[in-house]
Image (cartoon, rainbow, N blue to C red; front, side):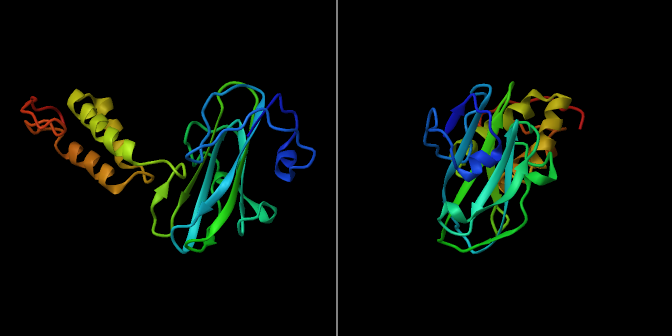
Length: 219
């Protein structure tokens, strides 16, 4: 839900009292709104999430200019409580800029649905909102609901391209990618493997499987 020229505070959005009808509504497949939509507006991202596992979950919210995250103890919005907030702007999908962005562990039960709500306010400039979580088994999904299929296809090609370019900044990018804890282990391991072969590249292209030898370079 989006409100243009919104002048109120988060309390108005959260209490849902005397709140005007939203200027527009759209359905999303993940807990992330489209970036750089407009200036001077507010948005509310809400719905039900189903816990895939029983145990403690950690939630994050990332926003520009600011945002708040609420979670209910069940499917009812009236039982929601604030669990995290982004008091100042954060870059796109930046989850750790402010300690308040991260929730305390929240116990959820597998198969149960929970109402979740993220509030967002934008003044001017860039704008965004996203919500992520870490499951009890340690797997991260940031943002929640994002399909990994497209990423699984694109990331290997991007990593291979950085490897073949062979510049110092490309090696640094691979190292930074390998250090990201929000990515699948297989993708991070791929980046580490490329770094291990950095000084003496394998003659076959890893993606195309074609014979494309490269000269040795500084490790």
